[in-house]
Amino acid sequence: MASALKQALKWAKNLPWNVTGPTSHPEYRDSLTNVKDYRAFSPATPSKKAIVPRSDPDHVFNITYFSRFPGRRKMFPASSSDKETSTDNLTNGSLVSAKASIDEPKDRSVKEKRLPSPSIYRLGYSVPLDDCPGDGYQK
Image (cartoon, rainbow, N blue to C red; front, side, top):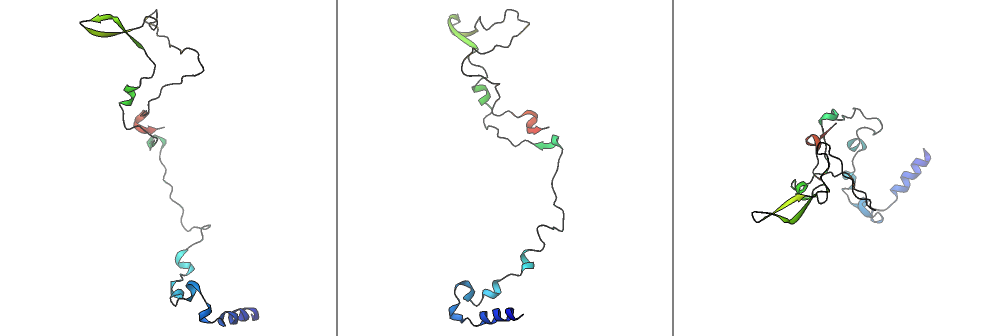
């Protein structure tokens, strides 16, 4: 108790012109807020449970990036050159594009998957930029 009294007297002996900063303003004491005004409860012990929105996975919208130009899929086809143009096949003055005979499978009922020629690059599956299966909803 005596030490608290000493501290109070030490604070009281400061002359007003020796106090600087925002504490020297007469309205400083009015601007101080009470602890109960800005912290109603301790963060460790909330009075209410947090409401966490939940939904079925079928109804969650996929917010990944989709391109704005859906025509881009048609501009850049998945495979490289599937068709070869030839000046030998002219019909009514127009150039006709014909499939290369190498690309045609011998048995038309069985379509084999054509593998790329071996190189240092490995081609992956072609997925368009605006690929959104299920209209953006994912499971």
